[in-house]
Image (cartoon, rainbow, N blue to C red; front, side, top):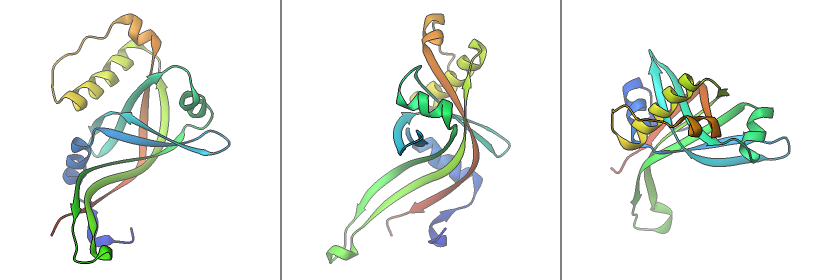
Length: 159
């Protein structure tokens, strides 16, 4: 990372950034051109292993690309605030971000899908309750698990 003073290295602080972000952008390659798509997400942590989850319609450009090239990059950011300066070039922007890479797997069993959708709902709503998912919805929905290979976190704060 070029700006090492902005790097967040503590695991708990990285997870706090992920907690604050509600949208993840996936960088996908469709065989011709990179493609970026925003998705709502959830996550799980085992030790320091991070797994991200998202859902989608079962067809379309994103699904076609992921079936062909499951290696992706991802980005999420939050804590946005303009930092004003005396001159135009002195303006900046506060943020916290996570950037990483991983492999996407399609979950097939209803139990796996429910577990992943539960992570998504908990993260998006902040509610740790048992959500109900209709069987017909599970059949119609592609639920994906992004196994994270590596990621970094960065924070630029208002001083």
